[in-house]
Length: 253
Image 1 (cartoon, rainbow, N blue to C red):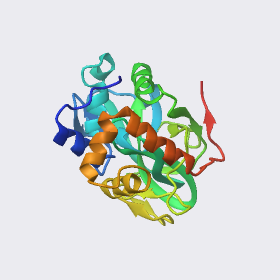
Image 2 (image 1 turned 120 degrees about the horizontal axis):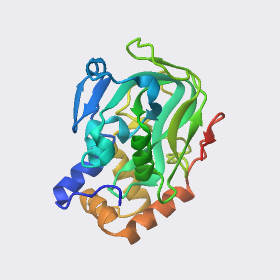
Image 3 (image 1 turned 60 degrees about the vertical axis):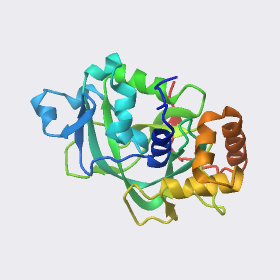
Image 4 (image 1 turned 135 degrees about the vertical axis):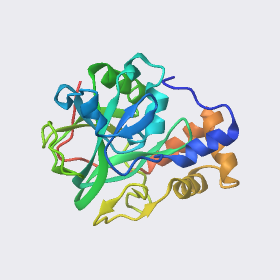
């Protein structure tokens, strides 16, 4: 298991409903479990050109999730710069997947005309391997690259290929809501064409449609504590999922 779930039920509910978790509005430096001003990248002598830029469009853009993955791990001894960008012709929608901690996870999709604000995480080789360990086991996600147009939200000159960014994508497509994807309301977007909802609203929708239509908190906890129930919901969600083919995405080994 890549990181341990909280034992207290109230903490589990907060975790499930909190996805994709709060992130700073601007670029920042993740260090020792907290966020610091991005200017400290220079202070600590961090060279972005020596790191891998990976799109963070879900929980990986948030300090509290990075803390779960990196604090206490050897790769967490190095800080992680995160730069805010506007990713053009894309949006972030809910995936056809229920995470082991009860949330409906995110998926990056090609969406001409829409620009969405995401982050680039600048990872060392060891940090990238750690991220792989938290994303790839179980086959729920794949790692690859997309050709895309984007710009720094703050006008930074960032040392990475402007048309070829790394990203983790869902292996099972997008959540199907009346024949269309459903965008994450938590992520700012321009010219968004899909309807959007918050996490608690989409959890209510999913459990009502595919699982236990009773008390939402009980259904969420059941999805965390009962692998049989979660598999039941995931199977039903995936059966109705939308194929969100990306014209330039290529899986990397």
